Image (cartoon, rainbow, N blue to C red; front, side):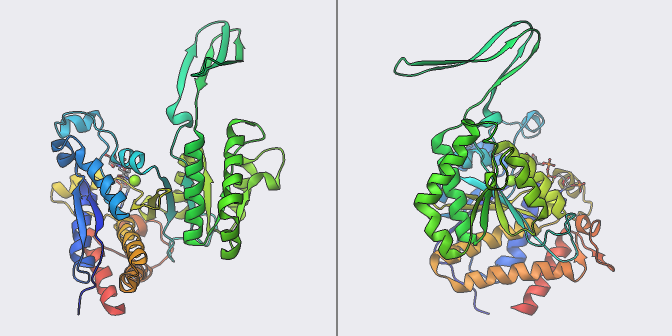
Length: 409
Ligand code: NAP
Ligand code: MG
């Protein structure tokens, strides 16, 4: 069979631990036999990040700007234990954080839906994609413990000398205090990412905020989304037959709760745009409700149209330590495979490479059909509604997918 050619390189970011092991098997068994794989390789494994003082992460992000599409393996975010384990020169920042800061993107997370792994919300038939605004709010807060009576103020000192001051609270006794912020620029690029991704994937987009309570702060999200929608996306949405839904339309007293009610009763197939904290909480809820973190994909989309695909889970450290001891592992490679297919399909789309897009579809199909035929890793075997299941180890599962792929290609 003639291998599929690629015109433009894909930015390949290798990673750590068990997912690094899976990465190589996926390439060897599911990609290289079929594709003349054209990638620009960056080793984001912690050892090489340390060797390059993390320059490799910056280079990989810059390469993503150059070529447009990247695929990333899960990576370790160093903490104190990792400093010792890898004798690191310093506690490097999370690679995802570094890449996100350079690409200025929004992260979209979607569950991979497969027969036999039923969501616990029984009317959810299609994936629900969470778009999390990954800037500001409580994640960049300033907080204080107040240990006695006094007055707390919100003060802004303008560069032009103008001052604004509002009483937050008069404390009669001890309590807590917090300040947080967001930026028009960041909210605007979040809105543009959301609307573009909605168009790209032909799904409607829902935004929930609490502007009835937080008239200025959450209200700003609502205003910016509405303005950008009206001016830049409304016609395209109408032509595509999708909608932008803001939750105030269904309720006047509270905006976040009606959207939750609407989500719970929906059948899925839409994007839920969330403020930073809501997105953090709701993506965990959605992924566990759909079955497993190992079945969740993640894509970073920048407002300029750069894409970085990865699995939502981490490096599966516990399995890796077992692997190092020579023990068998049954680690689920589905989300990592879907990171590759997502990236290959997008590359194909941008290059007009239909063969590459078809291959991505077939590989996804082969992966899902392998599970539906009862062959799966242990994490899925524990939650499946299928009977007569065969639990495979990490490599056997990938080989079973290859067998199915050869049948359908
Ligand atoms: P994790 O790698 O997501 O794994 C947590 C647990 O979830 C595993 O121990 C395993 O449970 C289960 N699990 C996750 N993915 C699985 C898969 N593919 N197949 C089967 N089971 C799976 O999270 P972590 O152990 O907290 O973090 C490990 C490292 O990953 C950390 O250094 C962290 O910094 C990094 N991390 C990276 C990313 C990223 O690059 N995007 C994201 C999150 C975390 P059992 O052990 O019960 O089988
Ligand atoms: Mg991740």
